[in-house]
Image (tube, rainbow, N blue to C red; front, top):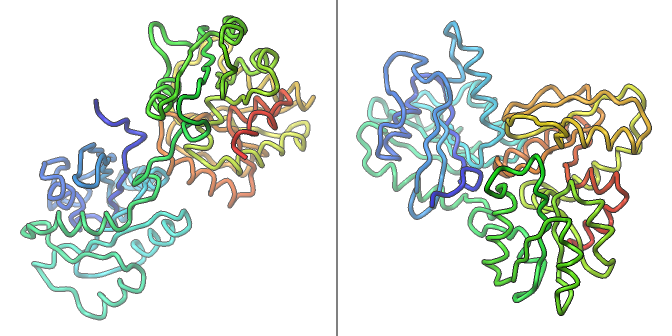
Length: 397
């Protein structure tokens, strides 16, 4: 089974046109992933390549258009390139023997502002060796630099791997648990999974599957029930469960059924911790009480899907927010990897982020903080509006 895309290490490759970004990726992957040409602007859209880069593991390379593209579609291409930064775990800046100029320095500033580690790869040294002065300048900005030639340096892949290994994020080297660290081995955990209009026919949704696997890997006993069968399941157990995890949409009903002495949380809150910053999301939810008539709220989803009747992002959460605040709020929805202009909003409510990587969510949190816009997520918003947030996050303290 292939590693989920959201769990792969995303390596973004950036640089000016014709510095050899695509050639570098093709050399490292030992495949013709990207088209190589002497014509500037050959790479237009972002090219993705998922692979096993041993001994690193599952990675996803992102080959981008040149950041100095002056072609007719250059502005659009550069915009797409800059959007990729938000889901880049480790960046690679490719330059040539000319060293760094404004374009690379702007990238460095961007990576530093988002806490994204980066490598500088100096390509085409077979054509002309880089001057010592330029090499020293690169060393001032980045200790992790490589001099190479993608054309004839057979050691490039080993140089790259060794540098990459030294920079791997801790959560990639030692992936965190979703829920298994919250309970002891042999514990019984109940998962409440509504089978409603939003449940896909014949299968479970990804977060539910991931939590089940995580708990099984942690040697727990997992019991899956619908909310209508929860009381019977609790009554049938000899001992109470160590934890109940519910779909956020059933939070109200489940909270009334589960005794106060049994810990309770939701899938979305688990993913708020796994994919983002739980503390930041909890803090962001407190801004709900400060919303006023006419304030704009952004419902932000990381994937696109067909909205159905009673959709959680388009119907249920807006209704909860309006009922909780009693205000005439302007609520807008946005989905996908793009990140809109957020300065007009008083609150951002993010989805559970099961379909994207943690780096993208952390980047969004950083950008929200920089814009002084509170950000929270679905599960935390629902539990806050229902007055059960303290209970829902108690197990994490």
